[in-house]
Length: 433
Image (cartoon, rainbow, N blue to C red; front, side, top):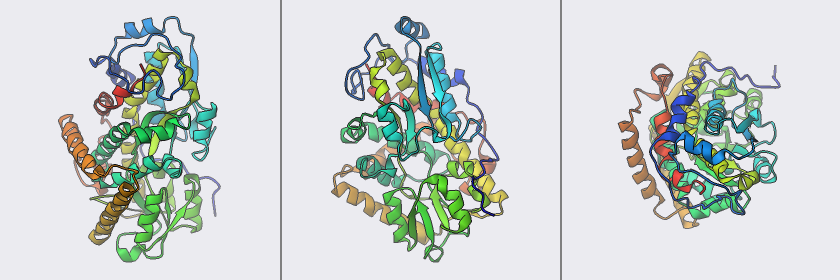
């Protein structure tokens, strides 16, 4: 019997991150950064007023906003509900904003893309139906070709269920902030980048039958999420199928597709393992990343400067919640696959080599077309080495194999230090001023 809606049951939801733990990051001693975006990252006239340095005391912030009227912003995160494994992407941001603003900014969270689907969310931001949202620019590669191309190149980051996710997100966002033409893809549409590139989670195959060898791939119908993934799936002799993610459960249930190539956190949230219990993954280079982004809309341009800074800082620091969602979701998905009787295994070496070598070809093509720098691979390698070292110093590490991640992942893992480290570098230099 075909169900009209997928299950949203998960075996493990990430713990609620401590507001005091994350919010305290805003009080760290990073003094005024020069904002390359000027008073308004999105262009146009700023709302003006006094601002404050990143790292300012709460007293200084309170003084800057003392005469400002309270406001409410509508924020549409990727999660389906507040009970979702992805909920911290919304709740952590809300908590940081409301505490830092002393309650003067209220964040109204819109769950489940209730105002605008991924296909129309950029328009909804531009016309003011929502004020801030998580979006998927790679779903529109013609409109965001440089964002999409960076996602293609990011396949070179070695995957793993924890360290690989931390590194990919840090590297991708850092490189995106340094590409003016990429940022202009948002700004030309009236969008304000808060996180211009969110690598989110790595890509795994979720299938009705195991998908390990080259022979297993032949003739399979595989749901994909980007133009580069479409090319990669064709290269493996399978047929790519493009469809909106909410349609994936029924497509797998009906046999319209045999597999989906997807991140694990939405797979866990959607209950895909009930109908496709077999999970396979890479251990070296991976499938291209489908670029996400956290963006603000036209209303951001009109806010007082201090409010812009609170929202911008809070978006960066709430990456702690984003990583808790992604990494906790990886553990939940692996647990679900096992509970459903599926296999959890790496693709064989021949398949992984094909994925790696063809990914390099796609990146080289993007460079030839001027969508990424000629030395993008070197940039990614250098940034990866830097962030791996930094995260190891902060105490983050993979403590086992991917197939056992549900057993060795510590649910009490705190990603506050990750958020502080990644935001206080290049991203903070773009805060409004």
